[in-house]
Amino acid sequence: MKVVFIGAGSMAEAIIAGALKSGALQAESTYVTNRANSARLTELTIQYGIQAGYDVETALKDADAIVLAMKPKDVLSGLEAIRSYINEGSVVISLLAGVGIDFMEQAIGDRCAVIRSMPNTSAAVGKSATAIALNKHVTAEQHQAAIDLFSAIGLAITVEESKMDAVTAISGSGPAYIYYVAEAMQAAGEELGLDHDTAKSLLIQTLLGAADMLSESNGQAVALRKAITSAGGTTEAAIRTFDEHHVKESIAAGVKEAAAQSKQLGEAYKR
Ligand SMILES: NC(=O)C1=CN([C@@H]2O[C@H](COP(=O)(O)OP(=O)(O)OC[C@H]3O[C@@H](n4cnc5c(N)ncnc54)[C@H](OP(=O)(O)O)[C@@H]3O)[C@@H](O)[C@H]2O)C=CC1
Ligand SMILES: O=C(O)[C@@H]1CCC=N1
Image (tube, rainbow, N blue to C red; front, side, top):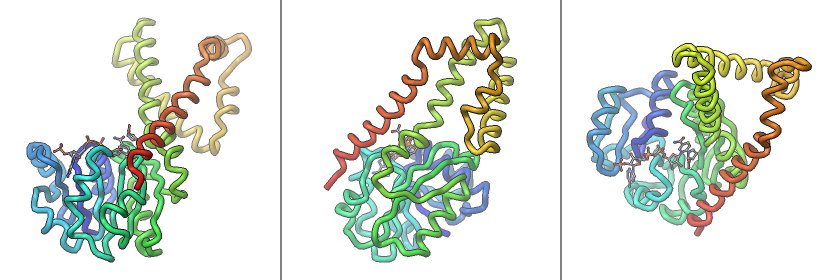
């Protein structure tokens, strides 16, 4: 499968790394370009053995999929770069937060498959949670190929485009929330006298174990938390303090704010 990434930032790299590792993409048929940072292209070529450069015409010839991987603010320049190479058989996969399918259709013509996706950076280790939404031109075969590509880097599901703001708030930005909690726990552990490496090892294993438990119990977060919380014990003291600081409400407010931001970004990218 020949895939061309327009944009060579962290999300493109996460997908390339995960898809090469899983065998869903091959280095010789994976192309990447960016706006101007040639040092970055060299870095990706050395690290992954993929094809990189600025000859977009050659790269896009016979491409099975074109992946838009620039920031939303650069979407028009990115679409402009590919527009003249698009035909009815093209498949454009967008990773961009907030940018609607109708906006892309208007820029490149309402004539080919457009798949709006929201992966996350855990793609790099094969553990992205990706949702995709399809325009009316996507065939069953193209849909399956997109699911296969994203399944190679984690979970892949199909949603209505109207759900994309919520998806972005939960799973697109989601890893950052977990890292935010990890930063706070690491700092607290060190303040309590653990050395950096000890706190880090215990924290990472705790997150991995909790994620596995959540997965194996099919998402029974409340039950799992209660099983750890002894009356009059340490966990109860921690949760009581979190509740006093309205941590749960703060997290919910943050997630909703992320969805609102995604929606607002989308307002700027409507036709
Ligand atoms: N990071 C994340 O966790 C997630 C990001 N996304 C989405 O992925 C997209 C990319 O994010 P991220 O990887 O973090 O961004 P980065 O800023 O890391 O990378 C953006 C890339 O786009 C390139 N670029 C900009 N304009 C053009 C153009 N006209 N033609 C070709 N390349 C261009 C830049 O090139 P140069 O460096 O030369 O300027 C750069 O390589 C965003 O739209 C974001 O919403 C989605 C899910 C998760
Ligand atoms: O912060 C952002 O806008 C992008 C989209 C989801 C994750 N990162």
